[in-house]
Image (cartoon, rainbow, N blue to C red; front, side, top):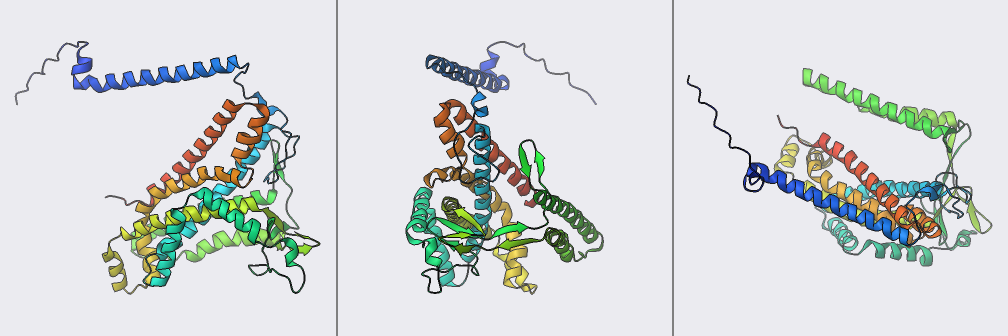
Length: 417
């Protein structure tokens, strides 16, 4: 077989950086990169010069100074004598709490409403449609203010729960009392709780650590059980029953720790003019979580409805032909296939909810925006540093949410053979 000699490569010339398509893309990318770096350098230099003209320096040392202000809602111990760093940490934890609860409740509301919109019952489908259209087409800030007005002007005062002929009554089996000042809910108490574990300057409850370790261990064992069941199914064609193992793995340790620590709920009780015994949640927190849940849930409902409709009708018809009922068809056939369509846009909704939590300033809830980007910024005059830190924190949170959801999306997507 005759081999052809290699073609002569043309000699490199500078004009090839523009006219030769092999080098043109590299030339354009290099020029754009240089321009971006020059613009960034100009912005940094201009900022430093402006700060110097105002007699300021760029430093984060203010975080070690005494904060000097109180925070009414805190998940960790905090006093006005703590540093601005501690205050920012309190605000960050409050932001994460609101975001986590909002994502959880919005997912439940959205999935439920999305399925109900496809119901054959016109009344149920109509009610779900009205909810989606109303909450989706009105700005979130307005909903926050409306719900705040309802809690402030419509909810009864704590004294209205007094007496046999009280003007108001508690809800959810007499365990929750919404008022115009706060919302009284049961408090978790433990008689035999282990001592706290001190990490740095933060004391973490030993019971929380025990529950977390039990949950992580149960999750790891559950994954191993699922892998074992899949191997058995691949080898024999029949999948062993493992639901009871999952129930024991998750409920067994939790029930055991609850009994060991003697954990129980203490309901709120009216004493004098206020509720005590339980936990009084600030209405700003309740309003913010409720508004974020209802607003984002409307968007998730449309995402879920579109994902379900993307699955071919033949899938449900085939499942029903095998004798499956409507609920198992939806849970075992339709939703698993729809997840590959639902997850990507749902990631965007989780990110939007996390960033929208900064609207807590409208209800006076002390989140990251109110602490680091509010009181700390005003006291120290460090606008640039506070904004950079706050933007960086929101960026990291958003990237972590995206990474976690992308990992889950990769697990549920269709595997091509």
